[in-house]
Image 1 (cartoon, rainbow, N blue to C red):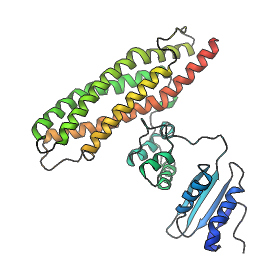
Image 2 (cartoon, rainbow, N blue to C red):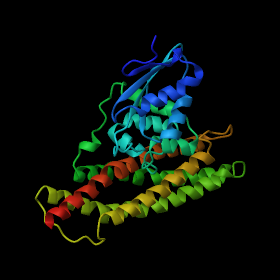
Image 3 (cartoon, one colour):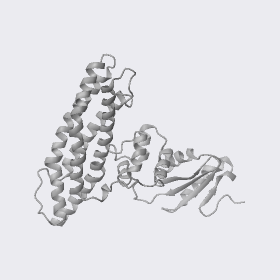
Image 4 (cartoon, helix red, strand yellow):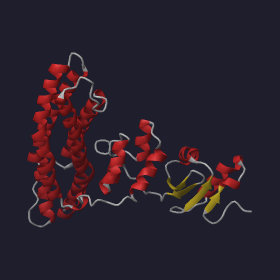
Length: 322
């Protein structure tokens, strides 16, 4: 009986010492874009890490069946030049997958330029488990999420201002007030509240200046570019050279506020209330939790959708002008 067929390999009938060498031989013989499916009686996860270590990040790994008796995995050789998608790109295409990133503490907005493998390696997470959950998310019926990626740039910029900037301006003053109040009442028993209050104040100062720069400088230029695309406006020289310059600044500031909120979450033990927490304490933690969730989506829309499209549009516009 042969262990191999055209694109299927039953490793259960191979000697243990032959299993990995045979799989590697079969993988090496694949043309780019082709796959081999392996059948095993246990999870071949160690193979994933060995293949990654010895061949590099040149394959996709997909569980077709996962126990309890049999495991079946499809391994596909990636096409040369085909870059693996980053967290931000994955989330931009499907926000259902952003929920999985959030579940494992993977930053898809400020840290969205990392691949799943890179982000998992940094945090010591099981990448095969997370990639499997991402694959399963494709099978979950969509609840018709907002089509952010299909919107025009001027519409998306206005949406960010009217939805997320408005949210910040409405809720941040209350968060500052409760952070100060709770720190004064409970700070002697919970010293982390002083640090949380300080971080909230830093957050407020940073975001106040940040929103103003976007609304007065960057977003008007984005809307001008969109107008040029629609042949309704003439192009003027920008006050900052290429749009990459203010985008770099905005992304750095996104990183700062993202780290502040991550530190607040750590200090509060994921917003876990102590036994002596009062109603104001509870409200503060709930508002901070909701604020962080809104800010993650806000930054995601800018870093992973708006900014890449603006950079591409500016490049095309300048090229056409020349």
